[in-house]
Image (cartoon, rainbow, N blue to C red; front, side, top):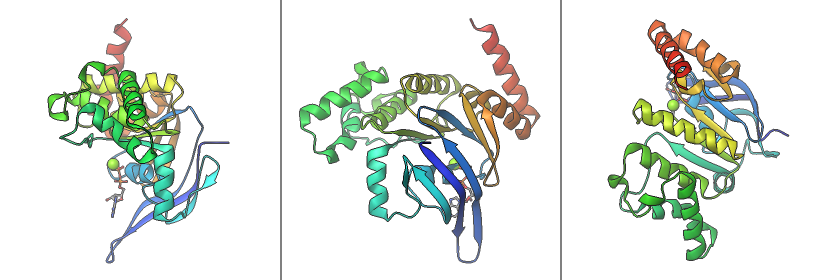
Length: 256
Ligand code: ADP
Ligand code: MG
C-alpha cells in the first residue's frame, strides 16, 4: 500500500470573478521511504500539491488516500489531527519563534502530546542531535545562521516522528552551498528511513533525489529518476539554467 495515493486531484481556487485551475486531474503515488523532489515553474501548482498532501487543504475533487485512510473530505478538525500525527513541515521561511531557543522551538510540537517536560526535553535534544546542532541548543534564531535555522526547523518537523516530511522550497532563502548541505541532510534522513517530499526550483538539488516529478500547469508531465527529470526541467527553464545545471554536474564529477 502506498503512503500517498492521489487520484485525479483537481484544485480550483474560486476568486469570485475568476477561477484558477491550480491542479487539473493529477495522479501521484508515493511509497513509504521514498525521497521525491517536486519541480516545475513558478505557478505550476507545487505548493498547492504540498498543501493537499500535508492536509493543510483539501482538493476540489479527486481522491487522496494517506496511509490507507481516505482524507479527501475530512473536516478542519480531522485534518488537524492527521497533520499532528502524520506530518512534519519545513518551510522556506523557517517559521521559528524568535524569542524561543532552538531547544524550545523543537519542543513545541510535543506540548500538545501530553508528554512530561523531561520526555519533551529528551526528544527535542535527540532531534537536534540528528541535525547536528547540539552545540546551539540554547541559541535563539537571531543567533543562528540561515542554514542552522533551517536545521532547527527540520528538527522541529522530526521531533514528533511523522510518517512524512514535507519541505516546500526549504533552500529558497539559503545560499547555494548551505542549500547543498540541507539537501545532504535530507538524503541522510531518507537513508534512516524517512519519507520525504521536497519542492525545489533548483534542478541541481532535484538531481540528487532518487525520484522527481515535474509539474506543468497542474499536471505531472514527468516522473522518474531525479537526475533525468531535473535535466528535462532545466532544459525547459532555458539555456541559462541548463548551462548552470551542466556546470554543477561537471563540478560534482570532479569532486572526489
Ligand atoms: P507553485 O508553488 O508551483 O509556484 P502554487 O501552487 O502556489 O504554484 O500556485 C498554482 C496556481 O494557483 C497559481 O496560478 C497561483 O496563482 C494559484 N494560487 C495559489 N494559491 C492560491 C490561492 N490561495 N488563491 C487563489 N489562487 C491561488
Ligand atoms: Mg510554491
